[in-house]
Image 1: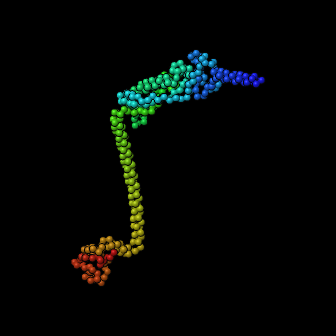
Image 2: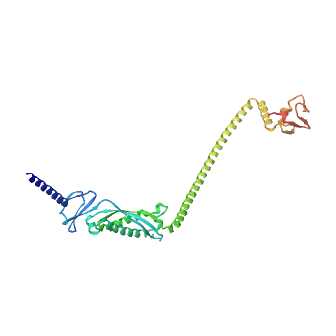
Length: 326
């Protein structure tokens, strides 16, 4: 009984092993990050692009070829190209690609290494053709509107994608990492760029000066207008004040003409005479009538010690300090 039980266990183990080996040869799993192509005796039979558990005949009848279905990046490295104006450029580019048709990919290039060789040849060829159609100033410039690099890259991507489709590849994007000049050309290019920057700076300074002159002219014009308006308003107020003063003077004159005349004469003394002024004029002048009539008993003014004036031959000398003191 014990021997029979051991034999049964061994047979069961062997059967499980055989089934496991047979299952691994027949069943396989397709991952979501890959495509699987099944070949029969080396010829592509079918492709699985969806993940899941699949079945096939065991090898060597049918074999599996797995390809990454994610985006892949290939860097072509630095290469020297000539633009239309024959100024050398060093270009470092890369291409983003993926397997689009796994069956066609297997038939034409078989693996990623061969696919990258094809990509390199096609991308560099398209770069050379495209760069040769543009001048250097259209690829590298301080003027954003003059740069046509984006248009060139778009054309290269479309042309590359069109040519790699026959290999079951799709070129998603072609980009330039480095667009540089050979060492011997850098100094010349830098001088040209500096001259361009100086020209732009001069243009900005000129525009700024013109704008400043315009602002100053507007400010001067506005200042003249403000001053003119203020002067006009001041003259108007001054005229109104003079008119009011004349009105007050007229009213005062009409009420007491003698007092008004006396007041105006004394104001005239104050304006005409100061401490250093000597005036010689006839004794009967209207300006001196109040002084000459100060002593009505004397018809002819004589020398008076306290008054400080003399009258000789109908003329009067009046020191201002004796007549009007401010």
